[in-house]
Every structure is written in C-alpha cells, then in structure tokens.
Image 1 (tube, rainbow, N blue to C red):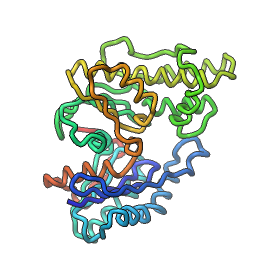
Image 2: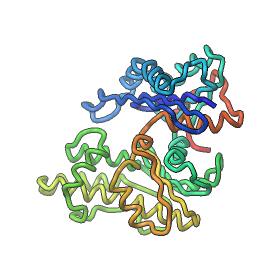
Image 3: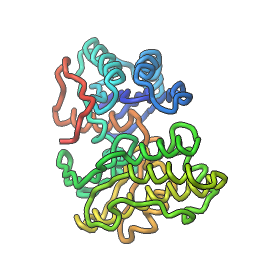
Image 4: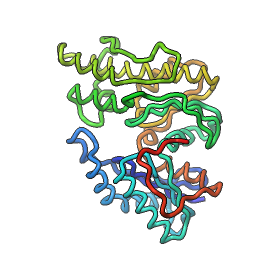
Length: 326
C-alpha cells in the first residue's frame, strides 16, 4: 500500500510517503518567519503552508520515485492544531484525493506521535506506556493495543514544551525555547538552583509547570543574571526530572516493560540520557529526532494502518483544532 501523508498542524509543512509500513521519503519545511516574534503567528503559518505545500508534496513524491497516480490513499492531519493551518492541509489533500479518486483519512496528530515510535522500533510490542510531551501536550498514556488507549494523566496547566518556550523568553533566549535552553544548559550546573517540582513526590500521573515558570521569573527578577547557564540547566532539570519520575511510576503502575517517549520534547538529549539512567529494567524507546517534532512520516505510517483495515473519511470531514485521542 502506498500512502501520502501531509502535516500542517502548526508551523511545519511536511509530506511523506509510506509504502508497506516503511517510510521511503519525508520532506519538511520549517517556517523561520516566526522566530522574530518569539512564537507562532497563526495567520502567517497558514500563508506559509499555502506557499510551500505543493512543492513539499512534489519533493516527497520525487524522492519516493512514485507518481500521483500510483498512490493508494492520502492521510492528513485533522487535528489538533491551528485552525487555519489545518484547513490549508486538509483542503489541499481533499482536492488531491478527489482528483485522483482515492480514499482520504483525517489523522489525529497526537495518536500519530505515539506511533512514530514504531518507526524507531518496528518490533515494538503492545502494551506499553507513552509519555507524550510537546509544546501543547504533556500526557501519560497506557497503550494497550492499536486503537485501545487509556489516558493515565496529563498537565493541569502548561505543557512541558510550553514551559521551555516561556522559560527561554524569561532568559532572553530565542524561539523555539527547548533547543535554546538545552544548548545553554550544557554550560551550566543543573544542581545550582533547586526549582520547584509540582506533584513529583505524589503517586499520580499529573503534571504542572506554571509554578516552575513563575519561580524562574521571580528568580531572574531578584538574583544575579550573570549565571544564566546555571539557571537554564537547573530549569531544564526541574522539567525533565518530573517527566522521568512520572514515566517511571507509570511503567511500574502498569507493569509495562516498554516505555516510549513522543513529541517535540522527546528530541531533548538530556531527557534521553536521564530517563535511561533512572528507569532501570525497562526498554526506553525514542523516535529519531526528525520524527519527534511535527512531521508527515508519522501521519503516513498511521494512515496506512487505518486505511489497510478499511477506515476512511468522508470528503467533507471537518478539521478538529482541539481533537483528542479517544
């Protein structure tokens, strides 16, 4: 089965081709225009998708050595995401599917992030626990089987990725904040400052990062600003320490041997190192960094799994900006 995947949920324009569960091409364009604003501007994101999407799709097809007529179906992000960005991708995909007379399927972006781990570990077996951690979501999932998921817990306020972005802004760093903090943190001592960790000592699956963000703001207002590397390292450690301890508890609670981490924050090297050091006797799986951030490979892969069992969407399906995993 040959599936074209298209992703335009936020500020990444991406297309990929999956053939028989293998990604044969993956093309992506990152929108650098948002950097100067310190965050994504929805209207600009939509316009950039409109400019770039056709070129990205043709690049993915060219790299896969396929023509449009050889495609068996199209998978596109239905949600969650920015409304205008989602409309751009789904409208393009609907027109293409209609013209080619092939099935189309709207894909849940969050579910696709979970299944990106199968691209890293094709032999990954159910059940497993997943820490889904990105700019918009921080969740713990018990993945029992394909289409069988149990939400264990999630953040009550800011997502971890959002905490990184806001923290970077307080520290005077660029956007996106996660990579910026990670680079600066390498020069600092992560034990220099004991920032607060909400719920870290409680046996639950809840997260909260708003208090940490406020603590950083007060610290920078009242302390010496010359030790920014120590501040960045300590702030990053406060976030990652909570993520790893909650993932460890989830693995123990569900008696899962496999732990997977998905979403943009999964690309953080310190998170990868710290989790493997502090969650013993478990198989910790991370996707390749290119499949952690928003990408179309995960959309194409999950789309193929659904299309293979006959699941399709009507051509007039709606976008779902606040889409959740059932």
